[in-house]
Image 1 (cartoon, rainbow, N blue to C red):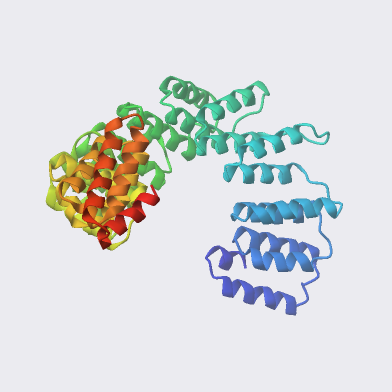
Image 2 (image 1 turned 180 degrees about the horizontal axis):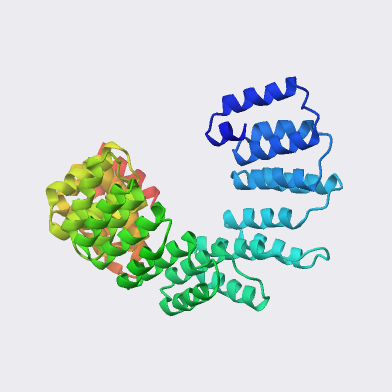
Length: 448
């Protein structure tokens, strides 16, 4: 059953389980526990729940399977319910249970609750937080943008004489990468070299490659990459992104070819690392080169690919390609607030044809002007707003003018010129009389 479940053949898994019931294994506690563990590990929580409810003997191990199963499969509310239910059933949570709850809170970004559970666990008599508990807090903080706090927790881990594992180290190195703390990362690397098993671990190796690459020490990143014995896709992606950020075009192509020759298939992360890396270093041509190569493989670009490709178009002043990408964005109804809107504004502006974009779609204007406010892109927003006024488009699409006025008020509330502009527009509307156009504008005025 475990083989079929691992392969994702759930129908065959259930068929074999039913066959076991026919043979009389249904009430066997050992068999039930093994089957429950299999269902949980395969993410078949509905089947796991049904079997769990039918089991007469439920010890802490069985309850832990359900708590950790729900938590690891993304249903943390059910995990919490199981946690409370097991206490009501008279089964005391153990270290594994508490770790599942702490990790669940941390994964959801509820770091204060995770910390509170951790502190509560520290106050228990039977056991203390172990490396899994500490790692859950460190990883949770790093993954949710609190890298400094992750490093503080790691220092406390060492003070408590808890030996970190590979996941701990990988998370701490990632925190150093986020904060561009190369020296701290080197010190952790030195610790790994002295500690058996850490330096050769693929998770640690990948994190170190990423650290050195993003801190612009690509030669060190390459040496560390070469030392990883069992490279995975993340290893290759990290090194390729490092070459791109360092501007090493030929090296990136050679490594990409080597990667494919060894049977690794580039994914969207591979291509985005290359496209983004080269465009951020100011090499739009090479960024677009990899964008085209990605499209040729059949992989559909996501918002990161699109934003980076538009940045490449801006760098090389390729308005034609920029318009084609804009068309793709419009056809696929891609949200402009994802960063694509800002990239579009920059592309048209840098290509010197901001008016082209405005004329293409008034709906786009209404969507992009609020994006300008969110991004504090005042100058670009003003260009669009002035075009609307200059061409009288506010008469036909008052929403666009309203968006432009709101942008000006949000970013320059003390600028009296904004109020004079709005007063002039209202005056023009009154001179027109109660036409349908001015009624439309009055509707917009009331919502300002």
